[in-house]
Each structure stands twice: as structure tokens, then as C-alpha cells.
Length: 112
Length: 114
Image 1 (cartoon, rainbow over the protein chains, first blue to last red):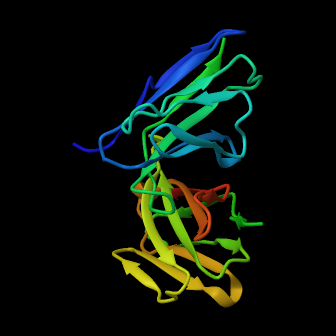
Image 2: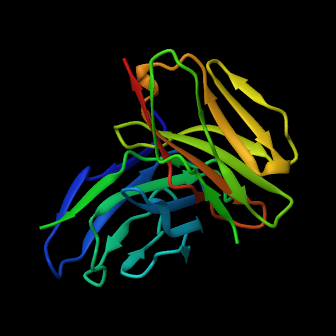
């Protein structure tokens, strides 16, 4: 079945540690996105990529990094510089920018 | 600047009642898209509808209907004869034709009580 797979479902980070969230899609979509969701805050865009080997910062990119080496994959690294990483992270993809975005099931990140 | 406001943070209704979720948006662009997404307890956002700013026709899909009014910058969502399975957080969103991003409102949490 076509879709977006995020892993792991739950992730725990220790102080000073970098962690990487995986996002894979088999929909042959060009554009991919990472959002952060905090209670009562809606979705905020972290990074997005419209094409392989290219990506742009969203509204809250500080403390995060991404790569887009393959069309299917858009991993997000939460670095130790992100002081408040506890949140629900959602990955999305669309055929191209401005189109309907389809979402994965999310990764819930907590700090130990 | 673009903005989406969902003034209703949380709504509770009894099953089989009709319920309307409000969405008001701000944009200076004449060409834009409006969206509604549903987020059930599982967490994954599910796409419901996208409307083009040039298409003000109301849309009905089963028990769901959408009322788009450019004059009031609103894109309201009504669920008729609500069911417990409709319980979720609903997000309204806006995308300008010139922009690659979607701006989401903060969401309305809907509780359908049996």
C-alpha cells in the first residue's frame, strides 16, 4: 500500500543527545515536510523539501537539521541545540508544493 | 501575512446533533487554497477537502458540508447527524498560490458524546 511511514512511533532523548526521526514515502511525491505539534499550538513547519538535494527552513528550524538524498526519504535530526524538543512530529508529502499534503502517523519525542 | 483562526478550541455535542466548526482566514493574495484536515486520536492527519479561492460553491460529502464565503473570509465545516467516530481535532489551513507552505489553524477539538 502507498503511504508515508514514520519511525519510531515513540522516541526518548537524553540531554545533549542528537536523535533522528525517519520519514519514508512510496507515493512518488516530490515535496516533503516536517511539522512540530505542541498541545494547543497547531502545526508549525520545521523544514520542507521540494526536490532531492534541496530543502528550505520553515518557521521553527532552529535546533533541527534535515537531508534529502533520496526522493523517498526525508529524515529529521533533533540536535542538542533544540532545548525544548518534547512534541509530536509529523511528516507529510505532496505531489509538489501547494498540493494536498498527506501525513504519516507521527513520532512522539520525549526528553529523559 | 497569512493567518488562520479557529476560535473554537473545544466543542462537545451529543451524538446525532449537527455541529459547525468555524474557520476565518487572512491573506492578501487573490489566489489561494483552503483545506480541512481531521486528526483522530491515532495522530495521523487525514485530508478532508481543498477549495480554490475562485470556487465559492458549497460542497457536500455525505454528512460533511463546507461553506466558503470570500466576503467574510470564512470556510466553515458542518457535520450533520454527528457520530462518535467524528470525535477528533479538526484543522483548517490556508495556502497561497505564491507560497509553497500550508498555514494551519490551531485546531478545534470535537467531542461527540454518546
